[in-house]
Image (cartoon, rainbow, N blue to C red):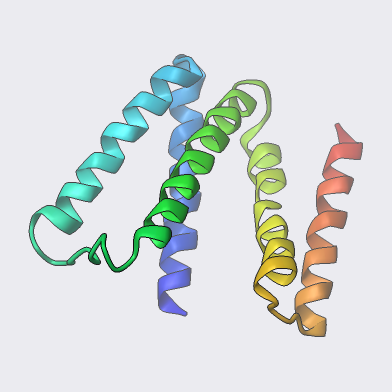
Length: 137
């Protein structure tokens, strides 16, 4: 649970910093700088030997899925950065948080995960909130 809390805080901080950068720079420039930041993270975590990577021969399919996830994240970030240029951070961040609902639906459909009542209600509340935000624009 602590890992999730740290991830949420860091992602929130990242979106805030992206909005500040996007005020003065175009989306491709912000994304290029963000990629440089990712590379610093990769060097920090993997370059100093703290974490070891799994064998490619044992996990080829998982590496393909990871590469596809990276490509989806890259393109998604590109569109999010364009949205930050046109929308307020408070609107763009909240609507973009619906990616959780998309991931949940895919998990149910393809991974056969089950949802509890509170998870369904939470997803419905998120969708309702995004619709309300869209109507106030």
